[in-house]
Image (cartoon, rainbow, N blue to C red):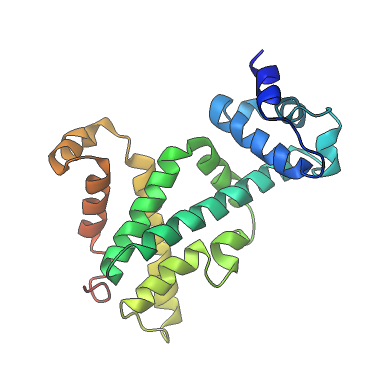
Length: 209
């Protein structure tokens, strides 16, 4: 019953099949989890024939890659907004981290698929590292803005990886009940996250206000 209602509420428009399928896959991911995802289920959710997904995706893996790619693009956009609103390199690094954790919190199934599909690939997705202004590069460029030496390529790469891992680790742990008293003391989750990033002290040489 839920699936037929979903199809009625979101009719498929000819010429936009791939978009309709990716949107349907995202809805299923967030409502029922990855185990519910199949090309047949996605077709049903999108209100198209069971054969329709095969016009764009040869199998479930290709569909998941497309969903993950959209997730990385969404994360990139979230990081861009966070960086644009921060007044200094140090604040930018904290806000990038907060935006990352909040994205993971608000899109848990999508976030998990993003990493599941990227884990065995030789390179990070285009939206993360392939573009000059991708999500990974936003972190790297903020370090450069803060005074990191562009000639020290290895150090810069390791610093960028360290910052990314710090955000990923906090995204995994932010829901721990043990943190609730700290969140209360800080006035909420976002101030708590910001304070944690400010206390990490990952790059004291570079991140000066």
